Length: 204
Image (cartoon, rainbow, N blue to C red):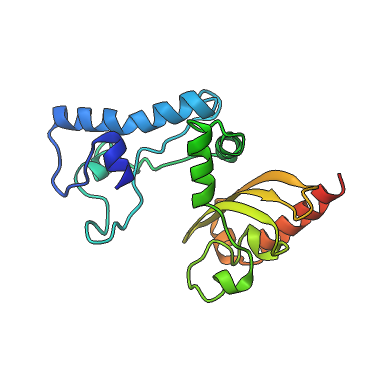
């Protein structure tokens, strides 16, 4: 697990004692500190990226042990404290990647390769879970340079992308968070919005 390696924290089912939990949480919060110091204005745009997403195949179906404790620091009956970001923070990060400033030019390029998407239908249409269908890339010309990371759960739909038109006339970053169940249910909104933005960018 990437989070385990970076922070030296492991997901276990048993709760940690208070002192051990304090150390464990401080290591996880190092992710927040790093991201905030390099990419965003953490005062005006607070963030939390200290938690893993569940289920974790072959390990845990739901948060347990310290992964649950970090979510409910005010007690087991308190509302869970979840990961959160905003579009500004993500757009800043994507810009750093595109400009080769995310850690280093080499790392930035490596990240871009990981999120590079082929928009030709044969590359994604037969895959049951893919980052193109119902998201930004679906409505764009197939030869568009497209680098994207989408997010999708039962109550939201998100996408963040670097988009370069085939003729290189349009080169931009688009980030949209739909933090409401209607966005999860609406499979047409993101492709429609993406194409509208694309066409407007070509006019500039």
